[in-house]
Length: 141
Image (cartoon, rainbow, N blue to C red):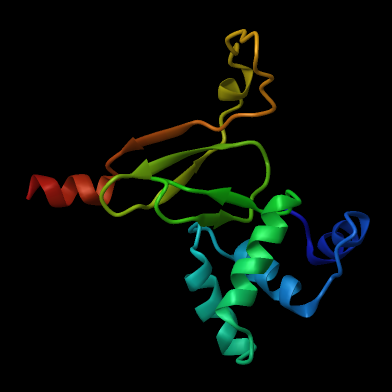
């Protein structure tokens, strides 16, 4: 994760304006460990910057994801969640509560990819789906 000074420098290197709104979105996401939605980020920022719009937050997240400054995680393809950790890692996704947990295990980054004649793989993410410990406990009651 970039510190705020490096974030501003990286924005400029990528030809992006380092706006206050981008700074706030990145800062909020960087401080979160939950993989928040755009709406959750919006509500957090609105406390400090009441004039920000939800559309600005969505647009900013998409731009930052497009430029690899944040990660975009779509756990079950119905709602985008965002990740301030752009290091190569994978995820556990709870099918019930939709909690997302990071997996930092380098062995997954050394998988041998199948050879495809008409396809060049540029990257991959592994997503394990199941039930988190809290949901398992609720199920057992």
